Image 1 (cartoon, helix red, strand yellow):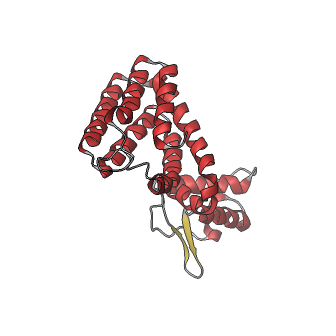
Image 2 (image 1 turned 90 degrees about the horizontal axis):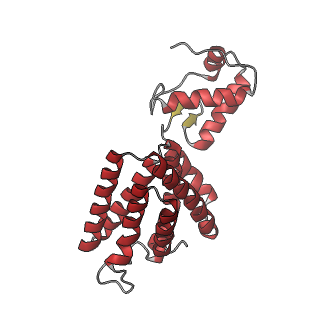
Image 3 (image 1 turned 135 degrees about the horizontal axis):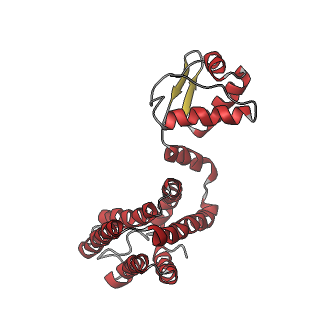
Length: 235
């Protein structure tokens, strides 16, 4: 593979972005040992110091594993994994609300884009997601409720047509999931629990969101989303 020389502007960032792309597109697969700093410097036409700084940045994100005396190995090709690693450092019980606010900003903007960009095929798929969620609520299976609810929300995100929204949404959800479990919000809709949420309250906001996207109504989408947040306890 031929690697073009890096332009002499923000060299470390350019080296980092180039190597990151090579990992994410599979040029360097997970587990592979990448070339040495000296070899990379020669290939990119930059200094070893620039390569070293870029590799340190990649290691901090969790993309590579630098083993002294052995070399540098690709650790993951998933940005979601990198966000999960970062979450361990930045997330505490004190900023649940901040993460919830970020999630709302991402999800609501994704809904707006889905309204503008959705196709008839996507609407059919979203209807199927809703029916699966409805069935899970009626059967009272906690794991299915959780899985089908997430599938519904993630498909709305996917309808926005922006891959980064999916990554960021998954990042926020991974941070907030422990809160849902600890607060009992995930299980509130289950028969036999103290705080039972009836089928109508649980499912109506999802159906309203489906209708809002189908009729391209931002106002209805906002109302449906607010209802969803009230159920989750993050309003």
